[in-house]
Image 1 (cartoon, rainbow, N blue to C red):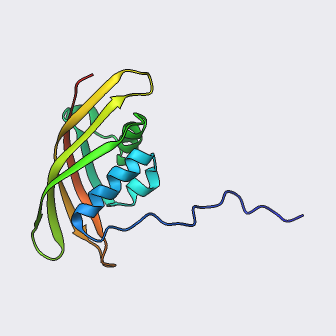
Image 2 (image 1 turned 120 degrees about the vertical axis):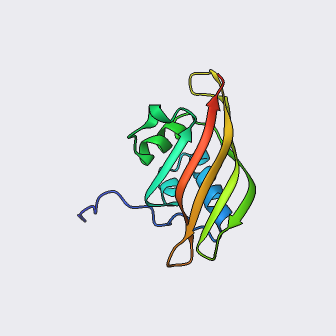
Length: 141
């Protein structure tokens, strides 16, 4: 009888962003799909994420925990890129809006929306990853 090697890792790596705006689009898709690893793959190690208007409530909370909290809503994360300001060939600022709306797992209406600013940096392999991501989602339940 053959021994099991344990749980199989996903053989398909998350997509890599080919441009600054695509990094945000890939995060939105991953959050909407509930794919935590794909969402985390779009951020640099040590990146900062602040998705809520109430910054004090999230002080000290890890990026992983923040993304899990968003995914637990089980709602799509819509993204609207308004402008990409490319500082040079290595760094860009992406400005836009995000919205999460619908009925949450408990049936309550959720409507979170707001503007955001994201700093995206080109990596050595040529892909783009998020260094700083700040959203100002305001909740109206």
